[in-house]
Amino acid sequence: MKALVLQEKNVWPALQEVPVPTPSEGEALVRISAAALNHRDIWIVKGMYPGIRYPVILGSDGAGYWEGREVIINPGMNWGDDPRVQSKAFSILGLPANGTLAEYVLVPQQQVYDKPPHLNMQEAAALPLAGLTAYRVLFTRCGLQPGEKVLISGVGGGVALLACQMAIAAGAEVYVTSGSDEKIQRAIALGARAGANYRKADWPARLKEEAGGFDVIIDSAGGPGFPELLKLCRPAARIGVYGGTRGAIPGLSPQLLFWKQISILGSTMGSDEDFRQMLHFVNTHRLRPIVDKVFPLEEGPRAFERLDEGRQFGKVIVSVKPHPHKRF
Image 1 (cartoon, one colour):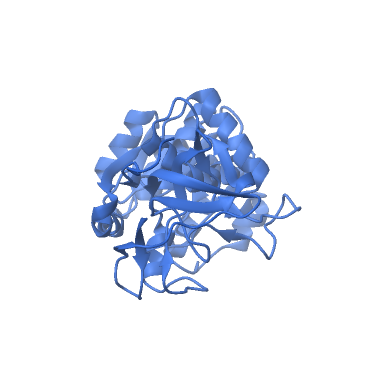
Image 2 (cartoon, one colour; image 1 turned 90 degrees about the vertical axis):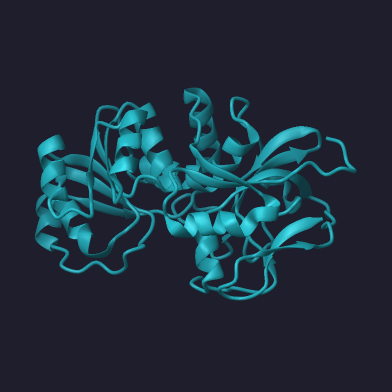
């Protein structure tokens, strides 16, 4: 089969012929129709992720066919029995196990779910990792309620954009930040109320003027801008943190935290139950993940470059042509 194989650090995965994996009892051999990239894939290529091995087929997100069904894959493996936190055995598809940037992928059968029928394969491939992460941080961790004011930072990335869509669908009043005025306008077109460009010094003042304050803030950046988020919190607000692309947080005020009764809630991926609830939410509200651009498997390096440039709005998709020798 054809696959995008990572062979060394700082070199985009290259197309190679590799053996089709053989399923054992309890495993599903899924024929991939479309896969989606995540920033996790970029960080692995750049050596910024623990436990990297070579060679490896990256890719956590995939949609395709198994036993005549159209399916998607839950990329969170071995969550464990505690719904509050993942087990020590937890891993994400695409490292250490080979992932979805290939014609076939081998996964445990319990990780395979029916594809939402209103989504095409490319939209379905865009959903699993980002949708699971967004759902858990919004609902399981932060307990978002209809009518609450929500701020989503860094809209345009896969998780932030799906969190924006989910919060709007749930009846929240949604605001966004981005380093791109164009991305803010596109989020407003989806139903967000307003936004602020975090590259401009007055972004906190602008959000304060627009919204007054927020009940829920969803952030993946951290860094020096994070303390400003506390100032935008209403009393009893919840801040959900699912990433830290801007690094450590300086100048965090404990006075704001305790006086406003603010909760800071870390969140990573989600449990199997979170995944089931996320699919139910997507099916109920007929949400469609935003696809930024689609590349054929043969142009995989261009897909990685697109994501690395940071200009995407939505998910970067890799399309896999049907295998000519097998019918589904």
